[in-house]
Length: 397
Image (tube, rainbow, N blue to C red; front, side):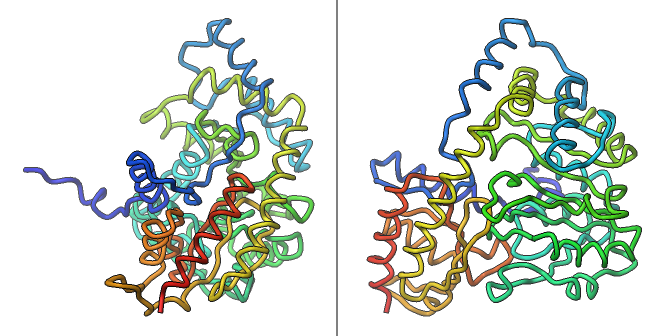
């Protein structure tokens, strides 16, 4: 009788949320845990954005909004895309959802039929393959290790595209690696994709503004690609608004209409007050965004320097987002007392229990030789976390 659907049983639980929950349970027991597992800025939402939300409450923005979001917010997003990305959209080509996560899932569910293939570079964000499975599609992984700076090549992409390929999901700047595809690298991918007109690109650009190498580039900016690219973005990371739950997609109107139809049946429009806050985020000063990015860059430099000094870690230099993804497989097979490390997940659990530092094993991100650390925390926490990690790893023999 207690039988869940096959659809649900086919899905994996979110590894990042699971580790965050475990660290929270330890904290509740009084353990001093440093949480490097969660992809969430530790800054507060800028005051002027909060003021816009307060004003919206006073002005009674408390009713259902249109399914794709208020026209004023979509107009603000059109302005952002024009000003920052040089891309022309109309508000009918914009749809807002309860976070960028819902936008990605909407796009996958609107486009993918049972048996369709979706190409996903690995390492990948944990939810991409699960969303494809939810749509009864088939995830097709293209692996790029630390020796490639976790970025796939055009030749690798070309090799996996088949007549069944329906979509290609690209996250740049990347979660979990922090890698950023530059202008030339994206041009190479675009040159492959342009030969396969039935393949739709889902471009997850949620970390667009946390970029340490200069200008952000999108596949939608290349000739012939805008008409078959769905840009996914939102306010969570750049504006420290994770809990406000506002993401958006920009793309061909036929896809946006399909996603609106889907969203209209299972969530309707996103939170009214959050939309007014997001509108302020896009239409007012961007100074705080720059300040947060500078802080993340300083922390990036700090954690890279310290992690390079951890014996057995292989570390690259992330170019964006706020994650470090060190290769740690040199510890596989080592043990202390009755604890033997056989995987990155074992190592992450050992570090949680012994060092009281929460990281996430890389298997659920598509690279079982790495662990993910978020440096969206204070400099002091970063220094102490790496110190603890070194002490604990030295116990493994």
